[in-house]
Amino acid sequence: MKAFTYYMPAKVIFGRNCIIENKEAFLGLGKKALIFTGRHSAKANGSLKDVEDALDAVGIGHVLFDEVEENPSLETLEKAAAIGKKEGADFVIGIGGGSPMDAAKGASFLIANDGMTAEMLMQEGSYRHVPIVEVATTAGTGSETTQYAVFTLHKQGTKNGAVQKAFADVAFLDAKYTESLSDKVTVNTAIDALTHLIEGYTSKKSNFLGDLMAEDGMRIFAECIPAIRELKFTPEIREKLILMSTIAGIVIAQAGTSLPHACGYMPTYEKHIPHGRANAIFTRAYLELFPDQTKTNNILRILGFNSLEELNGFFKEVLEPREEFTEADVERYTDALMATPGKLALHPYPLTREDIYGLYKKSLILY
Ligand code: NAP
Ligand code: FE
Image 1: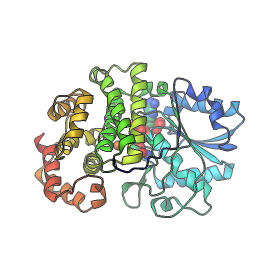
Image 2: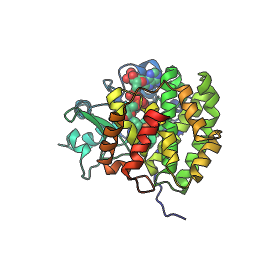
Image 3: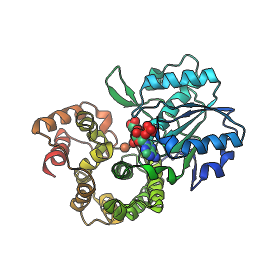
Image 4: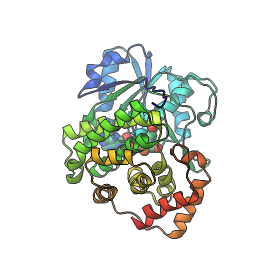
């Protein structure tokens, strides 16, 4: 069997009212928390109040930074960390979607290291961080169980994953917070999580333990397919979706994402395509690339589709129609991706320009 390392140190606490019922989980992390949220949702869905009540009940202080924007910038991290330091915060709590959860991860380094700037998160170096708690209120990124954080770099006009990586100490998953998500966001983020499962399962770094998780995650996704088709998201389905998304986070924490994520980046940036849908566009042609179709067949069997065409048909049915792309787009995206070989590194077979061109051409024009 292939050698592997499996590391996922976050304590995952799942279930209705899990924050209040497990408030002791905050003990020992610090004396005062810097809490990260976006501007509105954490106040509206009850997650912020639950965290504040739990901290009050166990005698831990807290200060709120509620200005995390979508795709948080390095500037936001610096602003938040300055407040945290001034207030004497010694651990962080991210409440929300990937944006506040990632902001909390980034700031955990800035608080721990005097003189560290947010730009240093994007560079090599060995830095400590203060303890991190994450409360997921979307079911898609899996940031609560990954070591990754993604930030907007305004100076470079782009987004990038931080080089400095940190797992949460504790991840709380209470699906009731996700009940306020719109149908569209629910579907797009669920498909993002599915593509994490598929890409982690087929990545060069996939391994025995991660594959067990990926297969179970896909089984849970399959149970949600009728609800996704009918847009009927009961509390039970919401629980399944957040669990599936966290499992997908655990999978990509080990194995990373692969070509659909890499291919989707430029079209998303240029045409503002939601991230989950962008990944879905490339999934059929990506899975067709494998000379050995064993894992593709497992994916189809677990999800309950007879062919990749049927899987692609499901994506088309539940996601918005694909944008128009030209041959020139295909050439440009192919050149850009070939110029960043790191983004191709997790594919288990060597790839030629023809492979990548074909992947873009089929996904953006033919399929
Ligand atoms: P998000 O950017 O955190 O939030 C998107 C929107 O959803 C915001 O307007 C937010 O409102 C709202 N929202 C959040 N929870 C809600 C709820 N329960 N009900 C209603 N509205 C809610 O969305 P996301 O898709 O979860 O995260 C995207 C970010 O994560 C990106 O920056 C992406 O690059 C990053 N990402 C990270 C990883 C990782 O492993 N770390 C993986 C993939 C993506 P408020 O602003 O008011 O909260
Ligand atoms: Fe993703």
